[in-house]
Image (cartoon, rainbow, N blue to C red; front, side, top):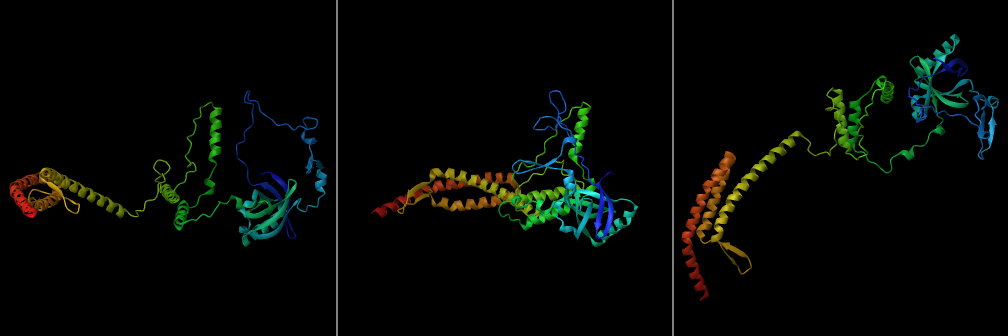
Length: 402
């Protein structure tokens, strides 16, 4: 690997010659700007604003723009004369625990390679000291015209340096926090913990850039003249408010299913529904049994009510209605015999209903038909004795009027 900077690590009075090598590389696919009409590439040219002529790199220097727009030229010689002790030195200023470094400060990473055979011994000493102490080194260094902050740590058998942002370059986070007080329930925390435990750890080496691979396939297909089918958009929820508990529960089930090799039923996203309060399978079975029993009772009651309604409709022609002194309306049959026979027929109906429960719907219909002749017999008896009762009632009314 090619080094981008040569210098030394200042470790107290120990100086370790090193080479700075980029530890990361950018695999993002870059595009060029073209003219849509003819496909010609669009290039940017550096043009002077005063004479509007293009200038080369050798004719370009540095300047600081003042508040009023005045340009103050700064040459490389001016910068070289500045007292910058870290110009060619990575100066270690402290050793701190790794958790003292805010990850927000981390920037570009580099490998520090020992530069030459004499550097091997002090390089190894610093590496083993960092391992033994479980700490990292905070250092200052200069790169590309400015002084920077860095952190040295051990990666395998190599000392790595992370460029750090200065503390005043980190913005305060309070403006990004949610507005208002949000309360999280213990049940939600428990489900979140369960989801974290289910997802578990991951092999970092197995992670890759799916988008970059898709772009590479797109470029290859277009280069070979193949047609590219548009990908189906994924439903990300559209910002809908959902039941957080239900979403967590579905996430835990989906994660467990994927780990067990069961999948999620075809790759479809699980629907989120409100949580029902039934907590066990037993309660569900009891509810279904109760509902069936209530349906059966309702059917029996309906059948009995229909039979009673038919009997009452046949009696309607023989009933008389009068108003009492208190204003209540009373309906009476033609004879007291009917009033006595009605409870008997009701008892028969009750017994018939009990039998019909055991013999189911067909038996109930049969018993209902058998009870009809008894009612008609009762009606005949009522009609035969109705005349006598009517006469007695008329004579009693005459005596009362006299």
